[in-house]
Length: 298
Image (cartoon, rainbow, N blue to C red; front, top):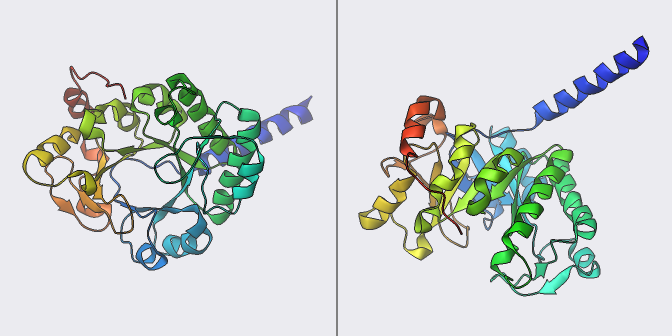
């Protein structure tokens, strides 16, 4: 009986240690979104966190780690990807149901967890083995591409098991968009990546992340006219006092991101020592900034 108890306690201790080892990004970081960047651009990044494509991870993660940076590795969950070595596995799976995400990738049947989960799990395993600190899984929102095939609730279910699968492989997972479900999904994810949230007044949908000391990495694309001036800046400052990391970038994501202070629009250079950390935001500031705000639907 004592032996069984000892084994049980040891197993619990090991589980706790494994979970504790998973990186959980907190607000206050600077960020470089370089999914389309080349190796030289990635190596020259001077931000706290760098997001890169999974296919660059094996070579680039050690370089960035040696500089004290964290790495988020990117792949898509709800679509095919032509640049992946497992492309044929997806084609043979019978999961492709057509459509297009605007980047030449086809939509997958996210409701077939039995077939899709093993494929996504292998990508999480690759990311973990390459040393990625976290993963961004894109196109969770396939209902936006094929609304006749999928409901929003399908995306909710999909997002939950994607996060759970990543955690089973001991790697952090970021919620990509899905503003309508951000509150419900916050407990499942370690941080969030948000695109153009000021466009539809959706930024504060993600406030539960920063309330729980989870980073929200918010990008607005200059291709859509976002600038740190005039009326565009006024809309961008809807992100103020909620602890986001705010950047401007281009859709190609080839070039280094422009980090700026979410409260003022002032440009931030380098590491987070030059910006206001999350710890300097009081709970009352975050609560006050969200008073009378409604959560917006996609």
